[in-house]
Image 1 (cartoon, rainbow, N blue to C red):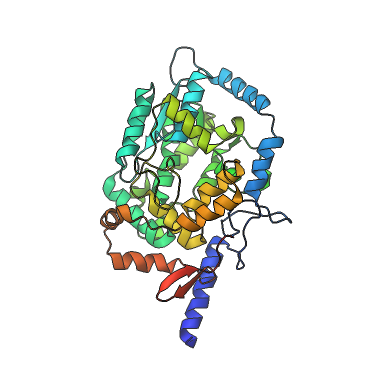
Image 2 (cartoon, rainbow, N blue to C red; image 1 turned 45 degrees about the vertical axis):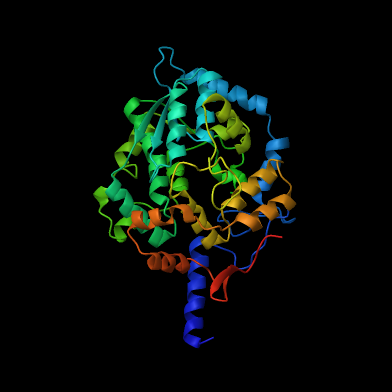
Length: 396
């Protein structure tokens, strides 16, 4: 290896590890298929990840009947008897948000207004599921951001962050609060608390909600207006993506609270699928499974969704199949041995179906795409073999 190339390689490795706080040594959970490369995850002395520990806590450490009574009291406090909206549910028409909205409406007699931040590019099944959900008896606000600005931010996020989904994530969390302010609705109900469900610190295991300050910090990955301005984005173009100081004050003044439905209701994605299928006409992927995984019912809305998971595979060695299999192992639907086989078969599968669409949307060439992708490969995870890339460590 030439000295100059070795120097650049080491510098790049340090940069990637530091950026995401990745451990230089890789190991996998003894119970599921996740590795220590997932940002924020922790392990106990037995080699079990914090997500698996939380899954055990859900089974034995939580009185779900008591939690249901807590939810009933919360709904009783905020329910409006005149039929006007009393809770915001950010939703896409997907299995999870549909389940949350339906349960709140039909089991707790609330009057939800669902708020949909449109995906980059709707899939046919994604838009059909949203229509089916609305047709089952819900009011929905569907918000499309300026497409020119959204495309610009998507490309910048892909280039700078290795994640084309950041603009979608920002809007998904900003617009529901903005609607809550406009309609003076005090409750905003998200689905699962991803930090605890997928491997965050155990100190958050029993939180029902987040303050708006911590919610913004938690969901926006520490990236705010100033960061995007440094990348050449006009501040005016970011207006729809970030809550401004006046809005943050209004949220506090109006006592608008955000809650996680998963605190009150045991969160099992597969059960949400069956529930949504039965009650709101949710349909699974007509292609049978999504690229990069074996499942047929998750993240169906957006043509560019597969690249978000593929880029996770590049940055952390953890793709869509890993995420699906890990949760289903914890839920008792598959064994670890089955999960390992599924990960090794499907994880990192390239989302070829909409590749040309992605290139057109971001206005980049295929050569540029791969140059950006390869810039996010850390040498502690990847090696070159016969002109191609291979992971150095795979789950066993």
